[in-house]
Every structure is written in structure tokens, then in C-alpha cells.
Image (tube, rainbow over all chains, first blue to last red):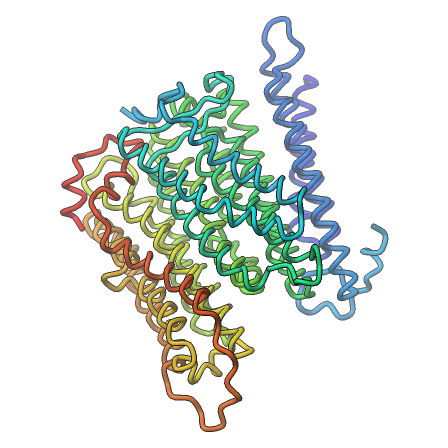
Length: 113
Length: 513
């Protein structure tokens, strides 16, 4: 198995884990973290595509690398915005979940941010 | 011969207009943020007429050139560089955006002016900068010719739209905003994954270059499925609509108007770019039928939910879910080379535009009603018609367009889609449209009937009626939705420009109305 294939499988696994977490976790902070894992998988995929598309004499195709930098910046700002919203929500309500009926949920997870 | 017009990868004569349309709101946004305070509002309002003129100039340019306006950034042509392109659909959306943003800004002056005793207040500063950011991002989406550029534009749009939802800082709207953001992030990361696959398979992300390179293979279908699912989440297509009603109902009225009228259309616009432009050389019937099935589901489901709402703003928000469904019926009807596709394409575009005007008018009207009555419970609307006739009239006109009754823009749009569905023998979609029209009639009636009834005897003390100017803003938008019903043939010509099929003579489109 070549390094690129291995990295590709890792990327796919990260995407799968992130997607699962994003859909199944009720807590917003975990959803945000899952989004980041999912994003990392996608960025890894971009890296492999860059490696695979390398022209002769180059280590990698620079275009996907440029895309990945933009993608990371966007994902970072998105996470920052989401965490800011979550913190504000915690201040207002003391809860970190979005469901309509979470009265028993302890807000301990949200305080660690 | 797919995409004859779009294949231009060199800057056209008035291509610089496209750059101005993107850069102008960005400059305004930066200045508003730097200067702050009252200046933010002045800058935003000052830019409105310029932006309107620019959008009109682009639309006129596209119409006069009878082709796509192109600007190649930095002179690097597409496989390497990035192009901005404006075709008929972009031009129509740009003008719609400029008009609605202007009306919403005019409307919002009463809610978001900086108090006289302060030099700067949080909500007004945020609102005016976010308004400009929203406008910049929308223009960027409608002009982008590169899929990754469109991704960035979509993200900018999300970052501008989410804070608008929670400007009041209440727990309920914060929740709505966070849910909206999570759905949007889910959508954008799927879209990005699709981009990675497309770039890996074809080494290009420019829409025109991609449309020349695509082959029917697994990588393409997986990429398209991921991107479409992501865009559907951002458009609030039916299984993924949960975020929309609380977000759109909780935002301030001017914000709801822009979110419902324009922001959901942006991701729909990109879906159209993908399925009609990128995929133009390939057969794609099955996928189109799936999209239409979701759209038909959205029409029925959204309308029924709208019927059951107790609060006016939620009713309007659920009606958005339903009206988005019509947009997706355009996919199977406008694809391919058939005699009905011109009508279906025009119908789909007009649905996007007339729904934008009608829905913006209705949200502004609902905002005025809520302000005047102090609540927006539908059961408590009695007497509103006497208190604020102009507002209720605007709401009614908007409703007329949603139902698809003549002579509204919604009528032309739905009529074109309906005839295309009947001509192509796709009866199921025709039935969904008719049922949607009836249900829309029912939920609009549910609001108008109490509003037009005479007030109760134990009427609460009359509040000051809203300013005439703001009522006029809502009414103007509703009248625009009507005016589309009387649009000259030039509009129909414009909408067809740059469509990736060979455009037939315009007469066939006009007579098929």
C-alpha cells in the first residue's frame, strides 16, 4: 500500500467519524469538534490530490495546497464563530444543547472552552 | 453544442462592472467597520443607489451584448486563474438583490439607527456592516465562475447571515443561529469534499472548463451527490429544513426579509450552476427526478406545516420551505433539449425572483404588524386591516404571488413550470404545484381573514401606526412581485442568455406563457 493510499484511507476514516459525530452528538461543542474532524479529513484529501497531481520535478500540485489554506482559514473562522455563539448561549441559558427538552443535561461540557 | 456563450474565458468590454459589484460593498463594509457609529448607516445607505445602478448596468450589459459578461481576474485565464461571469440568471438575481437590500435597509433605519445620546451602539453597527457583508457575498455568489470561489462566497454569506439571526441576543435566537450555523457548516464541508473530488478527477474548478472535461464516472457522481446534499442543507430543502423556521422567524424583520428572499437562493443558484452548467454534456435524468421529488415533498410538507402555525412569522418561514420546493421542480423540467425546457427555465428563475420580492414584502409587513400590535399571533390579528391597511395590502399582494394567482409574478413563474410539467407528461410535479397553490391560498387566507375582520369590542388601546415610509417599503416590494407579471419580453430574453442550451427564438417563450 502506497503512502498516498494510506493517507487517503485515513482521510476517508476522518470524514466518516466526523460525519457520524456531527449527526449523532446532541451537544453543540461536540458537533463543532466533529465538524473539525470532518474538515481535517477533507483537507487531508486535498493534500493527497496535490501529491497525486504533481507535475514532473515538483513535489506537489500547488493549486490544491492553496485551496486547503483557504479552507483551513474558513473552517477556523467558522469554529470560532460557533464557539462564540455557544459561549453566549451558555451565558444566557446555562445550557449547551440545542434540543428543546434537555432539562437534565449538565452544562459541564460547555464550561471547559 | 453546450455552453457556447459561457465558454468565453477572456474579459469582455464591460467586465469591470462585475468587479465593481463585488468590491463596492466590501469597501463599504470595511469603511463602515473602521469609521463605526452613525457613519456605518450612512455608508450603507449611500452605497444603495450606486449598487442599484451597477446591478442595472450589468443587466443591461448582458442584455445588449446578448451574451455573458466575463472578467478574468489578473489576466490569468480559467484553468489557472479565476473568472467572474454574469449571464442572464446572474443579472436578474443581482438586480433583485440590490432592490431587496435597498428596501430592507430603508425599512431597518427605524430599528437600527444609533441612539442620539450614543456615538456607537452594538446592534446598529453590527446590522449595517453585516448588511454590506451579506450584499457582497451574494454578489460574489451570483458572479463567481469558479467552484472554489463559490465555496468561499457561500461561507462569507453564512458568516454574514448567522449573526443577523441573533442580533437581539435572546436565548431563542442564539439557539436558532447556532443551529443554522451547524447546518450550514455541515453543508459547506460536504460541498468542499465534492470540490476535492472534482479537482482530483479533472484538475480544474472553473465551471466552463469543468463542463468540457466531465465524464460519467463514479468520482463525478459522488462529488455531485455530496455537493448537492451540502447545498440542499444550505437551501433548507425538505429533509434538511429544520434550521430555517426558527432562524428566519427570529431575525429582525429586515433581516428575515433578506434571509428568506436572498440567502437561501444563493445555494440554490449554485446547485443550478452545478446541474445545468457543469453537467450540461451528460444525461442526468434520474438525479433530476430525485431533486424534484424532494421539491414536491417540500411544497406539500412546508405548506401543511405553514397552515398549522400559530405565529405569523413562523407561518411565513414555513411558507419559504414550501416555495423553495418549486425551485427544485425546475430541475427535471428545464434539463435536456425539449420544446418545454425554455419555459421551465424561465419559470424557475422567475419563481426565485418573484418569491424573493413577495417573501421580503411579507416579512416586512409581518414585522410592522408585530410592532404595532405588540405580538404576531395569527388569532389576535383582528382589526389589523383597519389599523394598517397599507401593510395588510402588501401582505395580501405577496400572498397572491405565493398562491400563483394572476396577475402576479408568482403566477407567471408557476404557470410556466406547470405548462412544462404537463407538456413533458410529468403529471406528478404538476399535481404538487397545484396542491401547493391551494395550500398557499389556505394559509394566506388564514392570516387575511382575521386581519380584515372588524376589530373586537374590547380592542386594546390603539398604538401609533408604523411610519408611512416603512409601510411603503413593504408595499413597493409586493408591487415588484406583481410587476413581474407584466414584465416585457426583454426580461424573458435576458433570463435565457447564457443558458447552456442553444436558445431558441424568444417568440416561442413568450407565446408559451
